[in-house]
Image (cartoon, rainbow over all chains, first blue to last red; front, side):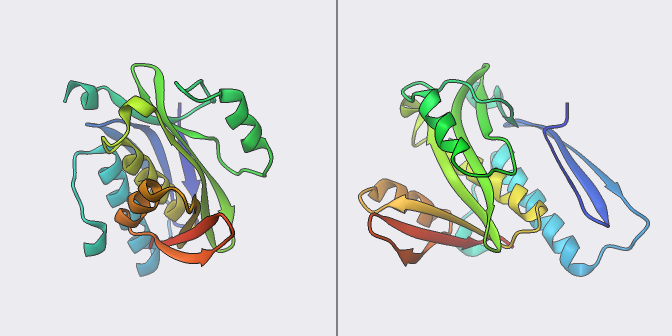
Length: 63
Length: 133
């Protein structure tokens, strides 16, 4: 069962499950090339998901 | 570490949380319009933390964050907030907002460590803000 899904005109990302040592994502891309800003958004959101589900210690002030 | 290995993060219907009356939380959720379901942090099929996001202004508003009393100060709250920041970004939001009571120094310190800063002062709360992208 999909837990969260978000669709833009460039991709659809689905977070299928998340745990302390595993995250299951599905990203379906459209035909359109992803603009730089959209790519940064995707990168940052995946980074946060890694911090949320993995064992990473990140100082937020360094971002 | 075994505890962390079995931890799972996902959204589903509200369940009871130790030390908190689930009905009171449920009713507070219903007072507003919400776009997403409550996000719960589970361990062994028990909710250990719960949070809620709504759209607000140009960002998302963290309207509730509760961590079970006996599991506080173990990093679960910050994991849940980071998860919600990611959902906020994917939702197209640039900022996250929340309100914390002025008489809650632990909460204020917690959110400052997560990169939030004071944006506005109300009578009994501070409005805090963080740029998420």
